[in-house]
Amino acid sequence: QVQLVESGGGLAQPGGSLRLSCSASGFTLNTYDVSWYCQAPGTERDLVAIIFSDGSTNYADSVKGRFTISRDNAKNTVYLQMNSLKPEDTAVYYCYLRRPIEGPTWGQGTQVTVSS
Image (cartoon, rainbow, N blue to C red):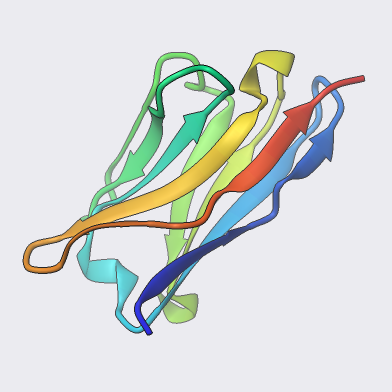
């Protein structure tokens, strides 16, 4: 079965950290560009970070300097390290990629809540 599974969400205090994981089954992640998106209630799903197949990365302005996207090809997993968390980072975070033939694939999402 081909799927993406996110984990690592939860409750963090402002200024705290979380690390999200996106694990793939049924295919190999390292040949694809993989993104993290977030969606807060009542808002659209927004791009947070992307790691390209060559290892280069790009980030939304709101998370630059605080979040880091990385990949571990041996574990077939992409990570999102989230530091200096703010209440406005509260959202459901989704892993996403697009395969040329099969099309887009989304994970089920993981909730991140930043609150004191």
